Image 1 (cartoon, one colour):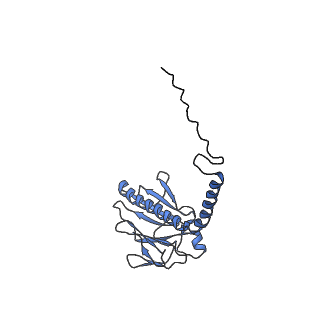
Image 2 (cartoon, rainbow, N blue to C red):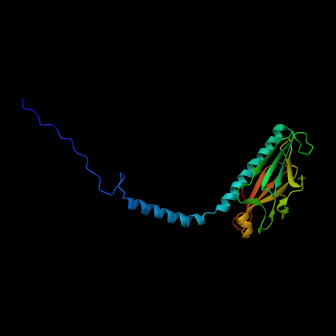
Image 3 (spheres, rainbow, N blue to C red):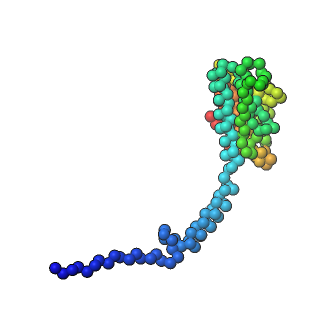
Amino acid sequence: MPAHPPTRLAEPVPAPRGRGVGGFTLIEVLIVIVIMGLVATFAIPRLNLEGYRVNSAVRAVTASLTYAQRLAVSLQSDVRVSFDLPNRRLRMHEDTNNDGLINGTERVTYTNLGEGVTFGIGAAPAVTYTNGVAGPATFNIVGTQAGLPMIVFRRDGTASETCGFYLNTTKSMAANRTSEVRAGEIIRSSGRIIWYTYATGTWTRGN
């Protein structure tokens, strides 16, 4: 029986010189990188970073105030939230004995507004709250604690008063821009917070 000649395995065909596994030359890859860099250079300045920052602060403040209200119901005692303009943050005081004073056994926590965000109305006009009253100041709040504007959440979930405040960015205030201003209103009867935005040049309720 005649022997069959040995089968030759096909030799791999080398890729064209200068091309990678994916079929792109180094020069082509570099061109794509340069184009992406140019696109990013022109696109980034158009992003409203200030708007993102203040909206992030709105979410953080909403979460903190909502938590304070629910905590007051859970603890069956007052929870006091102060608005700290110099440090750009909220201070939450669990007033377990309802005496209005911070003592060594009562818990105090803070919520920062975030980078570049502060309290302030800036160049925007005053918002009119749901009770028909305008809020011309940065803090339209009667209550205070240790010199800071303060709201109290009671054991039944209500707030000590209907009041309001403004959030803004430091850059927007310096440039007299009003599109980043946000107004917050706390409803006394429900403890709920309502937000307004001036992004379109007029106050619009956001929730």
